[in-house]
Length: 162
Ligand code: SF4
Image (cartoon, rainbow, N blue to C red; front, top):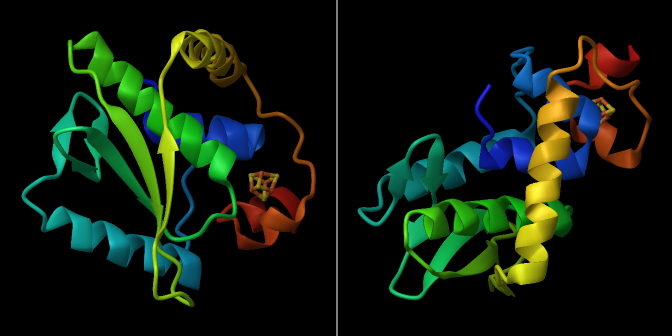
């Protein structure tokens, strides 16, 4: 399977989730969080500034920034590496941009914004992550699930724990 930004995100969020998604064990998730995510995505899909290439779909790209929109800041680390992966893929095509995470929480009026920069150090770590992710998803079975509070909101909750 091709590495995607979503897989990079799952790698940081939960390695079991990354394996299940990469191995095409996909469960329909109708939770409110996922519905909000879909609406945000649909809003972005109507934008003329959305860019797709290879298996990458960018929420928005401007003169200076690639912008990734999230519905909460519950896993900023995973979102940051997903965005770094997009910056890296663009850099490979000769396009150098900064990244910006925009958090659009339903309970708040204002968006939170975080700048993300691909530098030598983060790029080296990203390459290591991609390498480890490729090894993880090539395994014949997923890592044993470890319960965490984020599991309650995960589409794989029943698969892992019920
Ligand atoms: S339920 Fe928990 S352990 Fe299972 S895939 Fe989701 S986050 Fe990972």
